[in-house]
Length: 358
Image 1 (spheres, rainbow, N blue to C red):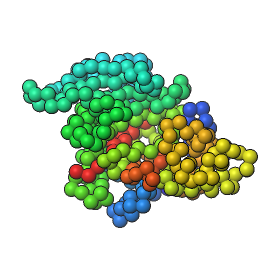
Image 2 (cartoon, rainbow, N blue to C red; image 1 turned 60 degrees about the vertical axis):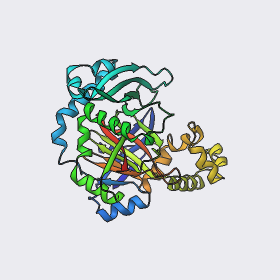
Image 3 (cartoon, helix red, strand yellow; image 1 turned 120 degrees about the horizontal axis):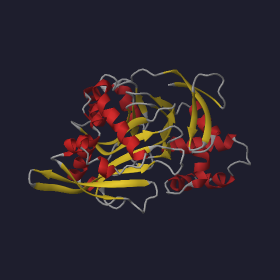
Image 4 (cartoon, rainbow, N blue to C red; image 1 turned 135 degrees about the horizontal axis):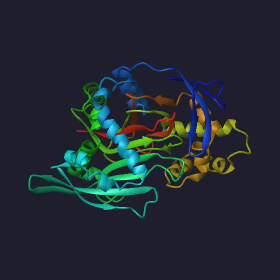
């Protein structure tokens, strides 16, 4: 993807990169890539490199426009203060959920400052309850009052404590709960060409789409640099359903290399604490895995100069409706780290699904 960058807009063309009050410059997409071959996809995956599948879902998006409109309405209702549990009890959602899923409770997650509400479900087959404590959790993406970005995460059990890969039955039911609330998920999970490509890439007969998150990236919003490694998962498929997003995505070794290279070229009086830490590559690698890595965030999440550095080295992507980005997440040492910014004035929906071999 050919993307030009400038600290200031030279014309009315292009998009500003704005996230949570930080201004990272302007970009313009000069050329979009063509669809890669299966060999190119396999090679990128084996090399822990993110790869864009441009417009791969465009042939099916038209079938889900009413579902996308309903999802946008749900997003707006939650942003305006509606209880997710009450919205999911309305006829439009009750008809989707019944008879397989029964809403059994709600929690307002006082121990998570970004969380809004967790809605809990039981799963039924006829008169038999086959699973409990499946949930959909709504959260803000940041603490910034000017950032209206939301996410709806689907999983089960005790968050942060339970090994989700150890319970494939409930993991599969949590995925089906996503299908009921956001039917547009099928644009990914049932897309023949995408699934064929993933099956070849993973060398398996069927691909499971697990631990699903539905994102609504709003203007001035997005996600800071992070990874999505979780035991039992091969990587992540992110699909842009509407709106547009800017991404920086690169493997952990590449990120460490680029931090080192950037600091070597930058004025020696800048980022002194990070320089001291980066002397030991393993120490920096371990530090990035800490929940609070503020010293690194000052560079990788707040510096326009570092954004420019990564863009000029071709780690940037722009996702439009119908695009899919594949990101390997096999281990903490090799996984793809990624950073996201909403482009333009539209709050766009994106589907982020972990994938595993079945």
